[in-house]
Amino acid sequence: MHDIVIIGGGIVGLSTAWQLQQRHTDKSILLLEKEGGVARHQSGHNSGVIHSGIYYEPGSLKARTCREGAEATVRFCEENGITFEQCGKLLVATSEPEQRRMMDLFERARVNGIEVELLDDAELKRREPHVSGLGAILVRTTGIVDYREVCAKMAQRFREAGGEIRLGARVSALAEASDAVTVTLEGGEQLRAAALVACTGLAADRVAAMMGLDAGFRIIPFRGEYYRLAERHNSIVRHLIYPIPDPELPFLGVHLTRMIDGTVTVGPNAVQGWKREGYGKLNFSLRDSLETLSWPGFWKLAGANFGRGVVEMRNSLWKRGYLKEVQKYCPEIQLEDLEPYPAGIRAQAVLRDGTMLHDFLFAETTRSLHVCNAPSPAATSAIPIGRHISDQIERLWG
Image (cartoon, rainbow, N blue to C red; front, top):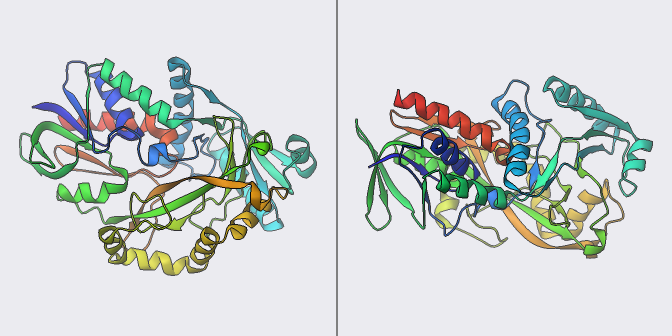
């Protein structure tokens, strides 16, 4: 019997496992991952940004853990020899309405305790000659890293502390008794643990349901499509270049991201996905699609964002539409500069009334804790979120 079983080998599961094992070297902690390696889904398919927390509602768990997580991620990289760069981010306003929203965002950043600087159009052009805009917010602390490397190092640290990772271990059932949780794997093997932690991302609602929890949400997958810029544009920007987000829209919008390998990517958009782990345009799962279409919150969300959803789908199918989104603030990029790049999938928790959950959501039973929603910037926030989960597990132990 194990003291703790953790389901999910993404960055939140790995951070939790590593920190719990560090605290309790005498405990038997097992991490289960259904794939053949860690960080195979959201943790390994993202922009690789160390976020600052500028966007998030002041006082929210998301705002606090992002700010703490940025500092913790940098320390972790320094301590473990992981390459990173704090190149900074510019949020660029390209219209008068965006300028007004920029000032609101600037004030939110100050409330969240983030060091920011306002740039006029001349200073923006001086810092970024290839970027056009009426002004920008400079966030100096934003950085870039390869989160797959971060995850690999967390897995190593977890094992070195005495933890065990089992790959190719897909959970098919969970059962809770007064003294233990029983975890059944595909093939019939059963494991017992005094406590369970589920960090299952795209399967969070299904795993919670296995434990009999009804958290009132459904995971709706959104595919985020990227392009990589042609190699001649690897130095086109010095910072990350983001648009000023529209609060009426559920996602941030297409941006230019310097990657830690020296390339520059464009994206992501946000297209309705019909397979939870489907990264191609034509990927389809009957089960996943039926679960999406049968959820009343999906239809309410789709109705409220119908116009934008049509635009996103059009730009997914029509490369020139995608290009226009980029040319708003970087007009010299041309169609031939957009080269193929792997897509990502965002696991978005949606309530019955169509509300998209933008903060972390946890649910628990007597012997289990479930991370039901871990939205961006979960990778940046993973270390403080892992610490938070570890605290909660210790409380469950009593």
